[in-house]
Image 1 (cartoon, rainbow, N blue to C red):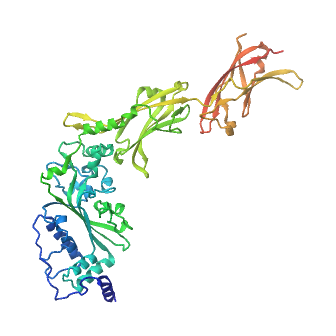
Image 2 (image 1 turned 60 degrees about the horizontal axis):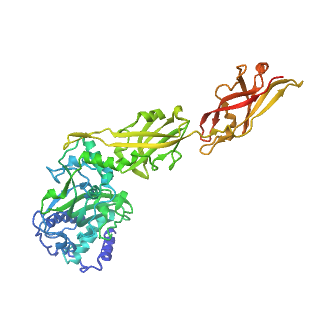
Image 3 (image 1 turned 135 degrees about the vertical axis):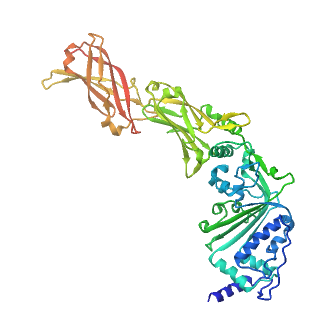
Length: 565
């Protein structure tokens, strides 16, 4: 049954071919290989030999037959099939351009170096994914894609001898999985090199991170600027719904050049896609292999660029993130205060307290109680390469009445790298200086409201004490107290009345608290000592805020004390 099904499929697929009949034992020989060793054509012959064999398409003159499809041979001049090439295997073009080479072994990457993250610029995941190097628009570029069935169709169209058994074998292969062989010709520019030319801080920091992982910097380190040549990727998938899209404006998609094909190649179902291998054929420039490379930046250069591009932090900024405020940062007494600076382009491995030491200067320690430093990703999901440098603490009581304060902090990389040119140790340093206002809201407004004084009598009408109703009026423009928690209001210490004559100091008792006033009563035991005069009255009120914080607010005012009858 399966054989009949395959025969029907063969008729459908190849019905429109130039040659719709298959040969069997009478198949003619395919053209012979004629490529010169070391050329691109010779390299592609080996690739298509393995590909056609894996598809089960075996020509009669197997040992000497040319396996390159005619659609590629037609582009011999544009492809540069006759040019001598350097073959770099097993690494995608992306990874090749994110690799730290030594000037003594350009492009000679052994297997142990390829799996070592310290030899890659930036996080290994970064170099595999994202935007891959694609042929420049101005360059000669082109893309070719073949599956087993398209390979058979190309052979039939070229009137080559293809047996029904070979065609059936190719179809059987694609019953379970589809193999893709993709070839891209162009001049590939390294996105890393382009960003270094633009002095983008993110790229320089990737170099620093790579040096830190290696434990040192060497002046012989280089990286690939780009190359003119051909990139070949071979993949297969086990899901018939999986599709490639390599038809961009320059006839090739960037995704096929990176290791993370499912991330950028227009795949419907990348989880079923397997990469079997990469081969990159680099045309040797007239100036030699060294012309393909650029010297890796020195630690002193990276440190200077980092300092220059973060020097803005030495002056007060509005771009700091501050709890509760973004434009006009305010620090409140009693509440934890934190501010941070989000710096984009920091490699994930560098964004932690394991990589940086954080400090606040002595003046900041006088402003903040128990200051804390933290370095972490701002948002792992939305901004994985944005690093947050954070300082937090409580305002010291000595600064409650200040109007403005400056908080200076420093972050210094734990790894220092010796710059061989200058012989000095280099570190990355981030300095921040935040000018912030101090607010003591809610502040008691002693000048607002009238204090009422009342006489307290017993059941017989005899005066036994006095009480004062103190209005509770606060400036709450920047922070308010929570009137729903009035039951939490209490006193810190004992309210005191101090009179000048006869040097009387009396304690008052907090009798009741309402939303707009507090009532205090005097101890009857001292009534006989009182004369009529204005006395100083002070107390410390513990006030609950809407931020679930309780703060002390000292109230100082004058009250009139009448003479006891």
